[in-house]
Image (cartoon, rainbow, N blue to C red):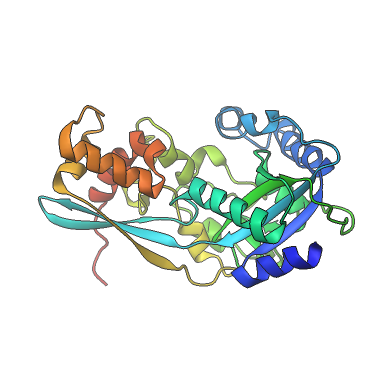
Length: 307
């Protein structure tokens, strides 16, 4: 079974790791210890992390399997009065849930045939670190050896009998981070602190543009560069290769763009139907409340001075 699982992953360019169900409690403890030490701002923890630590534990005899799949960024286009504007959606956002399910089905059919394979929702990065699949960068992004950080992690629980591969590992920092502060220098919001290996999540641009509300007064208009998420620290990181960018094939019409910018959710007719269909295909429908605001920020971003 192990040989088949490893071969399945290798043929697809994935990386895979597995371990006992007890890893969940170890990972949960890693996360909660950071909160107890005051390393994570309380409101940020409540909004972004807390729910993951409350999920029910897997059966004690289950096995965890975590798969890392390389994924690109995607380009989308918006038509407006001034022409067509391009915007970038970073890796892991486009079709995230659909990709997760596709990997699960493929794993169940070809990697672990005959076994039950289900999703899990526990702190996935922390589990993957404990299994040795990823290491953390100073930017708190996880990196997979040979693939970098442009990957989607997919976690599963299975009844397949996979032998233990040794003790789990404490979360570790990339070797490349020693003496390197490229990510801190590139961060547009000062969220990466050179004095500790944990970002100030409440200041991270990804956190800000995934959640509703007005932009904080301290945020520079020059910080915006993606439709959602942020790529600044990852693109500056020497542990990463070049970012793969693919065309999504999605272009929003003038009517759809106006509706998205209006952000009132009251549109009807063809524009509303087209907007909803395209957001659903991209897997961005749950971000609709913030996408119009984020697009406006991109449109209003000050132009870079000429070289």
